[in-house]
Image 1: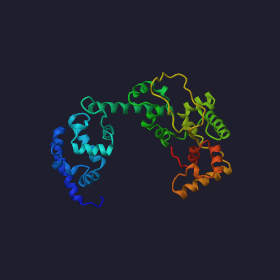
Image 2: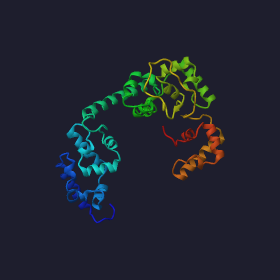
Image 3: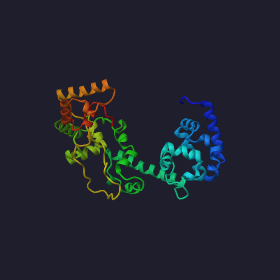
Image 4: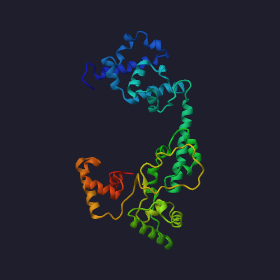
Length: 333
């Protein structure tokens, strides 16, 4: 609390008084504004006491006002349905009414024409169920699913989201896909698969990174996925991780998704994280320089803080600055 003429106890007393006054509010703007200066004036943000009380209240205190009113109405309250003092505080804190309603977990369409709380609950439950289908498909495939893998889910989620990337983020797909639980070493692999994995490892060493789906012989890939359960787990058997998109499907819309056919995989390494194999001595020294700078600064250094010659060598070797930082653990997936 700032140095003011009002003690903490006085502010608490004001808060309790305001809550009692609110309980008698009957949704009438006139009642709120009538004789305002005499009754409600001390609570106004134009006064010192009102400012102190406003600063004393947390976001949750104000959001609870909206939630409690919504419980009584069965829907999101409009501005005029909220006691004038609370309305002033809420609008000041959250800037826009829909933003306040969203923060409170309520439908952003307020008033009698908006969603009821029951409808909002039903909608939220359906979204959760659809996202669970996305997570299940991720585990089944062992990779980030394409929109075409789940056309029906896309069609329904298009009512609530615009981009497939939004769905992937909401479903927390990256965490699921790259968790330790999604991979395991398979003991006593048959000789055929040991040989196939050796071929895959040789290719990875030649490329200097894990190969993309499209760089592997289709028959070899199919056999390894069937035996290991997923492409990620196949790579895990030889100590590798798949190339991962930084922003997968960032421009892919949910509208117009067709039934599965031949899925297109990009060969581009732009906007990807992947571990570089066989780093030469110079690259290792350059990465150590960046890591030591990070420790000295106490934060991730930006490109301009790295000597130009070191930065150019690392970006050439690693493909991007983001992937450079990924090599030394300064970016976590």
